[in-house]
Length: 98
Image 1: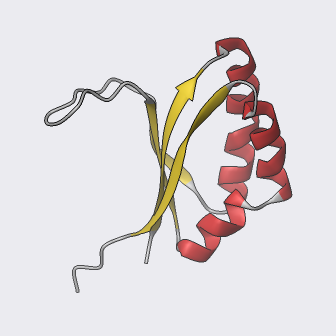
Image 2: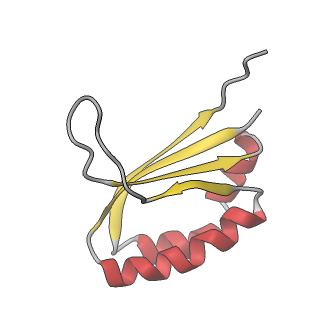
């Protein structure tokens, strides 16, 4: 069953964040992940206005998503992000309609 990581990111240093953005895709791909959205245009339909950058990743399953997040490859990206942004990363299991 697919799994998703939803990241809500508050970028504080756009220049340094570009380094993170160059490193993260390598780890995402290695663990079978793909971007579903990567900080594109958004509109709040209900509730408080969303002001964070929102990224949604899809992985084959929860184990693959955890493998990505805890991997040495993504550790390098997290180190680059440390002083460039803060945020919330949530892992959730996909829905199986069967």
